[in-house]
Amino acid sequence: MGTCLGRSTLAFLTVAHFLRVGFSLRRRSGESAWHHASEFDPDGALMHKPRVLLADDSDRFLNVASRLLGADCEIVATACDGDCALKAVNQFKPDLVVLDINMPGTDGMQAARQLQKLGPTPRIVFLTVHEDPDIVQAACAMGASYVVKARMYSDLLVAIKEALAGRVFVSSGLMDRHTRSGVR
Image 1 (cartoon, rainbow, N blue to C red):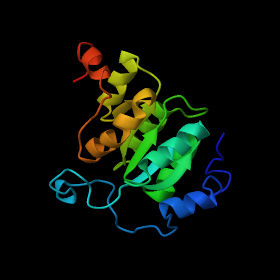
Image 2: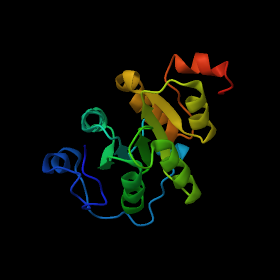
Image 3: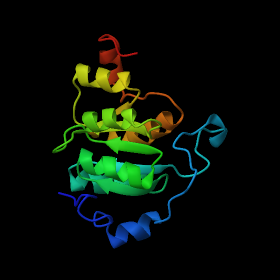
Image 4: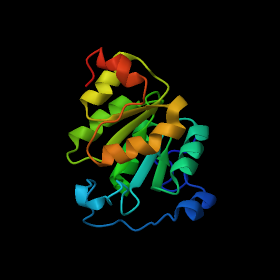
């Protein structure tokens, strides 16, 4: 289990993590959490690294996702549950939050709903094992992208780029099944 932000502001990041992702303690004042089309190059790549917060109760998935995204994203923080993720969003102002759905305490869906109540929020990508059509539909209804962990290597970075461009991404295979269930 990862150490939560609430216990110690920086205890959840290791020294190796600081060095690997170039962590900065400075808050970027005035930085918007939203990305405009002008921030993408002609090939669809972001011209700067998006600031991403990862929230999952599995250290293994946090480590794998950090390594997978490290070259393309600035991982500003990790959190082990929804409560810690909410605190980290307030402190680090990420552009995007990758949330697991099943976490102790406040789960990912509850955390996403709370984030939306706070006004301008970071984009949300759910990274989960769930393939239930009702859960996929609920995520899409709130404007979040949806990646199943089995497709993390092929879909997570694509989902992040799509979410930052203002589009909803759903892991392949799920969209076909869930379009029939009402997800568009």
